[in-house]
Image (tube, one colour):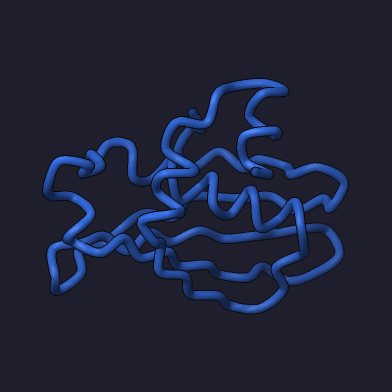
Amino acid sequence: MFQYNQPRMIGDTGQNIRYLGFEVTPDGGRRFGFSITSARQESARVSLDIPGAMFTGTNRISYQESASICYEKIRVLLEKQEIREPLSICLTVEDIAQLRHIPRGKARAQAASQ
């Protein structure tokens, strides 16, 4: 799990992810803010929304794990491309299923690429 407010460098892109915080959305969900920085460009803001419905029901996620899921989504995106402009993402049920139980280490990269 990542440490809040600690930048993380991702792979060979030289981009860092910094968690900025969250806000509650009108439907009871959460909007998480992150900043992506690198030495080659200005920072880009990324917001990730998790709809309120994903925090209820049998397959609900916990509020505690939601920031980690958002972090993992950004990390997976950065492995494929650089993020240079503000970006807004709404997480899907598939995103949650894929990212919530990613193991640590080498198995993490394999699980995230599936």
